[in-house]
Image 1 (cartoon, rainbow, N blue to C red):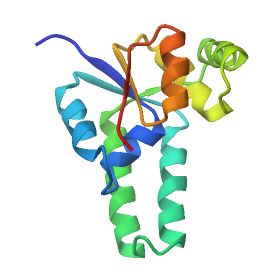
Image 2: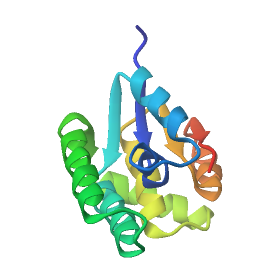
Image 3: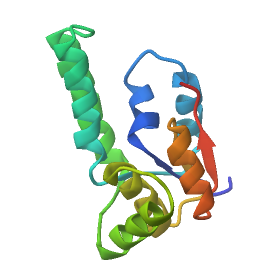
Image 4: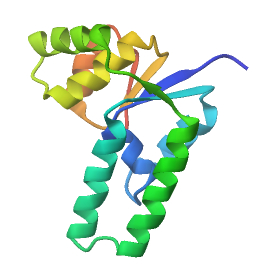
Length: 142
């Protein structure tokens, strides 16, 4: 089997934990990957999205607890890309040429520093910036 190292940004990996368009494609990519990488700040961003769902009553407290347990279990298996000086410098470089918020840019910098084979996002603007810095990118439907 050929090596396939993927980095999912938060907009894409959240589809693993929510019933929404693109969920099946994310599951397919996760199954095909030999290495799954997430940026160091991604778990907090996932939790933020799920907390919003909880506060909006889109999920129950029990559902939130179950999903967060799955998130914690997944992070035991996923590789975590540290936001070191190189990843931060690459993120800043991406922001210098594309309109990105810091969190979006950090995913791109982490993907570059980790030398992933594919960067996966559900954010069209982030996908454009990632491609511009040389990352092979898949845009997941939203």
